Image (cartoon, rainbow, N blue to C red):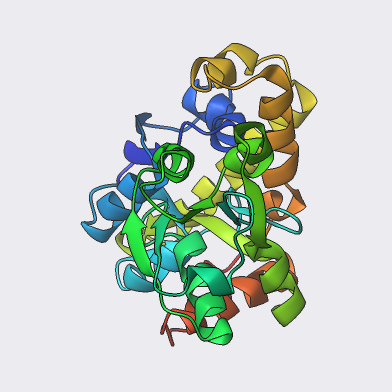
Length: 275
């Protein structure tokens, strides 16, 4: 049995909040962990290559890795009022973007998948330009693109840059499905076996519970990876993207992920570990 595992997650406050205790050994993992922090689209690519044992991925990206990975029920980003937002300069509408250029935070992201569904429903076609998530709003401001799909803290800060919300993609998903928006999930290699998967699921749950019970313990770790964000934005980020679904996806969460993956063309049924 392999005990030392490679673990990857993003430097965003929701992930560092959840994984701090596990990474620092406050929640033990026998054998230890090799930790990689990277942008979500980079993590999606690492998962596609099977480079990490346990990895945070965009839920949409999970559609392409389920032969090698299975999803844990804990550690994900899912909820209501937490989705990506399409932003642009004053006066823009969704229809006005037909034929235009729209920045997206990676081709394999959930944000891109849902944006594509919105465009299909609206009957418009756009040229999607993949970028690292923190390059999207500057590209809109500079006129490099006509609009951009923002994730993470961009949901809270686009107004400070003089941009407007053209469409709340999360609200669109909720209205069409009645389900929470499944933004990201934790995947683990199937080859590690069910017992290791269950133990990792529980370790992540305990790490999150530790963070909730001892919020000051991970403060410096979270702030160290979110240097450009204000204290208020960091806290709002955590409150928005770390929900009870992060402790356990539950029935609604499983249905939400299954629905999203079906939209991505995935027909596989054994998506989640069994507890």
